[in-house]
Length: 319
Image 1 (spheres, rainbow, N blue to C red):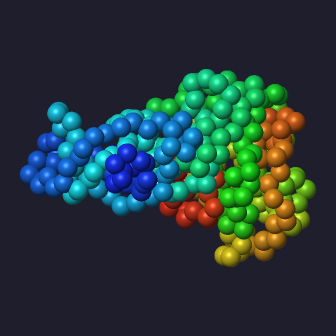
Image 2: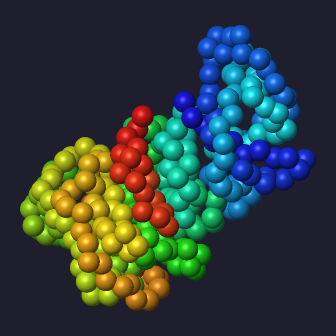
Image 3: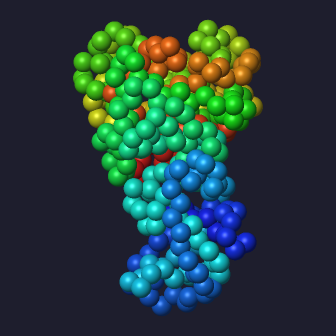
């Protein structure tokens, strides 16, 4: 499995880079030469990342052998290793896959309590929960999720940092969703899973359930030019939704469970304005709140690049 580590070469400071590490058992690694030296392993939690004490920046693979007596480095040398959110923690496999793609903000929504919606990207773009029930059953990755009540819940994702980093001309938004009951699909209420925008009339990227029964829609709206795909679905299990946009390529694509829905859309408009503090929301369409999700959400993430179909498929998979 793949883990993320941060190598410290300065004797005590977390300086990066984050390196994907292939973890093997001692028997699997039998006969492999041990080169270098692992001095020590220190856990880094989501809170450490959110507070800026650890930063995810990417890197190159280095194998690490796990033996009964601890960790040995192979292919080193490694001076010091910080394992993101727990040494050899299987619940971090999916999260580390997301982090490897360098999101500008990433909210796993796996907190056990509190009102802080932690940003695990390392960029410190924490959000705030309102009327959200935490520690609910997750997508199957070993982590929990957050429950939204359909009327008052929301996760306010707006920060000045996200506003500055968000790229309306090149980006990706993705999230895992689950409805609270089958009847949600026929309740006639618009319900947003995520929204990043200036307003709902001309500039936004939104993922939501439509008022039409058993129907979902993804929108990229820029400069008054709407690019949207509506499709029929009514799952009661977890499903993954993603959208990518690229003005340079003149393309918008929408995905469900890693599979593109509808045609690739072209003829994009020009986005105007910065993200609004009231329209940068997880689980609702505004901070009013309005058009609130009814069910559970997890792993909301935003990138400043249009991810490839291969990467979108990877985000939609637990393996």
